[in-house]
Amino acid sequence: MYVIHPCQHKLMKEISIIVAIAENNAIGKDNQLLWHLSEDLKRFKRLTTGHTVVMGKKTFESLPFRPLKNRRNIVISDVKSEEIAGCEMAYSMDEAIEKMDAGKENFIIGGGSVYRQFLPLATRLYITRVKHSFDADTFFPEIDFSDWILMEKLENEPDEKNPYPFDFLTYIRKDTSPYEEN
Image (cartoon, rainbow, N blue to C red; front, side, top):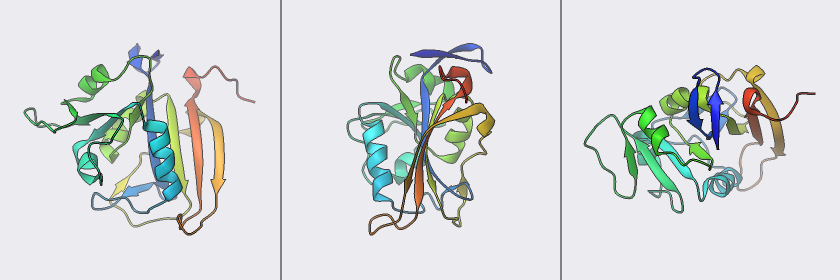
């Protein structure tokens, strides 16, 4: 599905962001995740399987298993000759968009600079909000929530496999949503 993004006024493919964010907007440190939440990893796999995932090279390198199975992996690199086995390479944001699937949801999975570039183009956000602050060196950009409609919120309490409380939040951008705000 193509959507016309009002800021760009050009045809864009369906772009979703999936991310786990701490209370202080932290998402990583030293190219690693800051926590291990089993339910978040299951949700990530369930939502992205069968779709295209787009990531920066550092995010790709941080994955425990690479490339991600049962997903089309697009890695953005600024090194023009770089190739990574099992992945499609893009050497710019525009090239990554060109390679995305039409008619299917495409997921931006990190890191910080890739999120920052794609946030203005995203039509959907899948956020895991971890209810804890962490020491970090990578942060998710500020979100202007007045541009978004919260479609789903699922609260999760900590347990033996999920050491922090967290919420699953799904947002749709207002200018692309068929839903009215109440």
